[in-house]
Image (tube, rainbow, N blue to C red; front, top):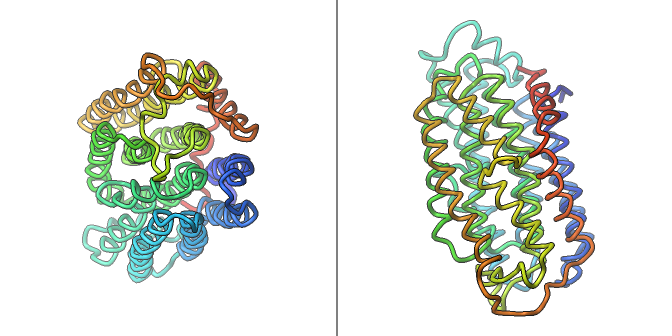
Length: 414
């Protein structure tokens, strides 16, 4: 484990996700009769795994961090013992996650066989001395590592678990998964590929190129046709993962900085959005449809305004953090001469904008079906306010965050 600019930044993102999720849980879980203490213990365990992944300079340490993070996340998904959907979500997440971990571990074994080391710095030195074109073990190891990590970040076609897990798990657990678990997954992906395997970028870039394009388009397109809000946000998170992969594919410092900026921004957007989901609650069947947002501006103007800011930022509206995040990764892609990928990302942004604006229209222009004002706990209100404030402030003045992410491109182990 080492401390460098990259690990400090992404560890900070994971820690913020843990703190805000714990704050949100203090009110929402008590209201639902779920165990808060157990949730916080699992949250801390998962966060510890995420920080380990962000700081790992050895593939074995990275795998241990991945397992600590994942096992705690599986239990978080199944925390609501009263609902079969929560149990199903936890089981599905566990089974598919176990397969992904196996792929990752096999990839580590092949990489060790090819290079003679699991230390990222030594792997980087090996690649610097010669490309992997004629090394089947190295190419196979890279492919298996990609499969394992693509599952963790919910990239297409390894995304099938995401909508079901997001729909069935407690919303506060999903808030952490969308922010903290995704940040840790991308920390591992960038530490392994942009740092240790950077010299072999020509071999893994085409795969990431195709996966990024598919993830952006499939996530945005399927999100548009969803009526359940949790599934909508699940497919939305898949699309956002595609944008982050656009920056990873560039394989440059600018691409890494853009991906880090996007991860930092998206953590607040995801946490704030799922905080709103917890406030509005679920129906008797455990689902939350778009009807719950009809006329929200009349029932709770402040909540509607805050959620509107978060949605517009995810759509990439100018002077929001989401706009600068998309600009950073697409700009890095253009500089890396991945023009088609940049064009696909822009098309995906246009498609995704429709689904966010649809929710905003329902909040402000549709008559409410229920005139009752939603009950906003202090903890949930605090999380929504913090996330909306960060989105507005760094949307108007993005400079400090841009400088922070530029400094975070320093890899100690690569």
